[in-house]
Image (cartoon, rainbow, N blue to C red; front, side, top):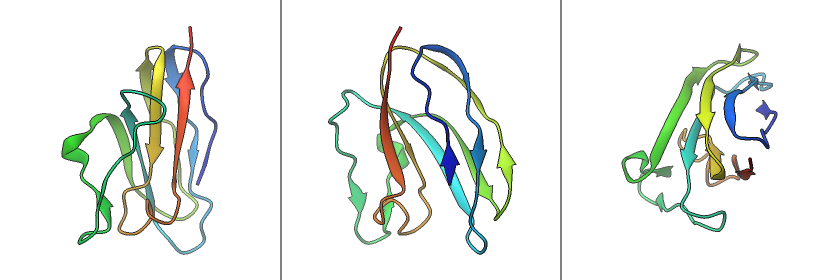
Length: 101
C-alpha cells in the first residue's frame, strides 16, 4: 500500500493506492494517546481489536490496483494507519505519524 503521510493539522485527503497484484487491503486511521502507544493484536484472530481504538475512518475492501481518497480532519497529535486484514498488522503493515499545527 502506498500512502502519503500528512504533517499539518486540518482537513487531510489521504491518497491510498493498493499496489498489490493479488491481495486486498484496507486502511484504518486511529488516533493514539501518544506516538509510543502500542496497539495489541488478538493472537487468535491475528487482527487488531478495533473496538479498543478511536477510529477516525477507514477504507475497506481495497482490491489490487484500486485507489481511494478518504478525507479526515486531524488535530495535532499522534496517529496510526494500519491494515487490519488477518495477519497484515503483524507483518508490519502499519505506521505511526505525528501531526503538528
